[in-house]
Image 1 (spheres, one colour):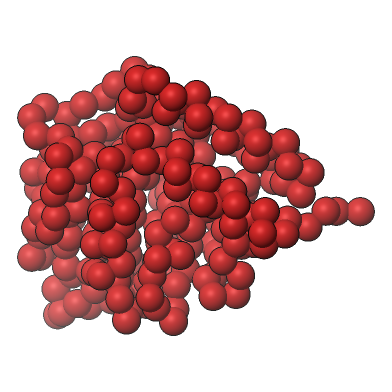
Image 2: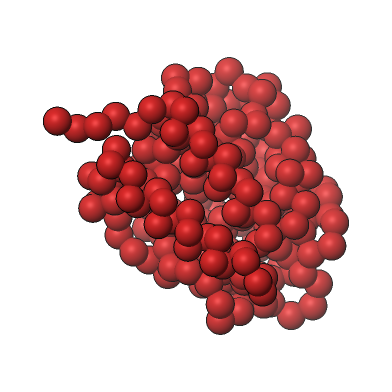
Length: 238
């Protein structure tokens, strides 16, 4: 008999995921509030949405969360209920976008997992997913200067690299050990495919140039605090 993940357990895991993310992206709540403002009132896609940290903040009637990790997807489904549609797809493989159309696409603390060439291609795919006049927003570490590719980090599942010293990485491992040990997540845990992260942290100017090359217009750094920034780009209406 399969044990169902309760909403209470899923919500507890989702909230503790948020806590564990903070050392990797300071001012994360402020950045995600910018994403929510960009997407408000639109058909929205939370790209590489994990447990639903962003989707839970979206004040929209039509929200879809997309991720590849079955454990994170199971938590998101149980925590968010019917309010958010949950979709399994691998952003690392072209074709994930087939048949999709949204008015807003948002991503947070996720796209650094992709190497430069794949991220440029992914931006072109996001452009194709957006309806005319649609908007894309990405929140991540975007330090000024040369692109950063630190050696620290955990593999796969949208987990952050660039760990801060101290308890950040230890707490992250503790979260995954707890999630994978939950009896209701046993099947999802067995179906996980471990992957690596490129830990690619270019400056915001790199993202601006890549988005313009992908066909976006009105590309800007909408918000910044320290090394955390939100880049916003719009698809032309015609």
